[in-house]
Image (tube, rainbow, N blue to C red):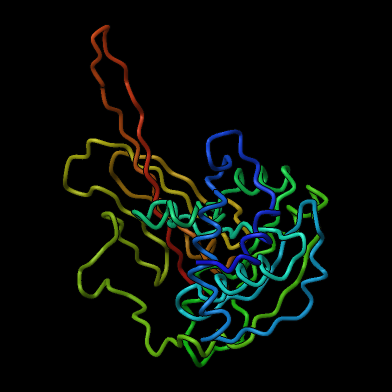
Length: 297
């Protein structure tokens, strides 16, 4: 439960609700209040957050708060979200930009959306900035929270897409440094590869020792088509393929132009289903995505 003073403070926050109880991205006032009631004890009594510079966040207009990322789980993002909500006056609710897999998580995806989280697609980010929203963005992405303790306070690959978006939408950028999250949940070990155990993800087998070989559906029938995209750390498309099964190769020479750095992989499965109605049938196209990344050295 929130104290009366914080409820009154939160009531001043902007919410573009067309009468549904939430905005077009799913954020609701009750969802923000729930998130604040959950994170406030951690913010005030466990981590005892001290912050400086909230007055530098514009009171309105398209804004991107850009911060370093660390700590295994995104507790730093939760504390930054709490700090901005409580320290800005009038309050601004930041829209954390989450990795692609977050909207696909059961149950928590709705909770996150009610608190303001948006999926990290360029379309969502463009729409949010066009509407004058405040974005909370971590250019390191998953690479930041997956680094080992020995690499604490060393920035991982820093994607620069937010700078292009800020220029395009004339949005203010508020650089932010988070100190302490590295020690909150340190990573002591990391399994780099499970290929030796014969394990793969969604039937995708990868050999990155030389050429990058990508295979799908080898030796078995597939009822759906597969789309595979490889992107560099800035979101630029490196290679794209659609197939029912088969394989393709990205030459080592092409990979070396990207190293050192990350290589993002998107695998989408598309299939069609016929749905019967009393007046006839319609064909429904369904599409699901999974994302991952590799570090190229």
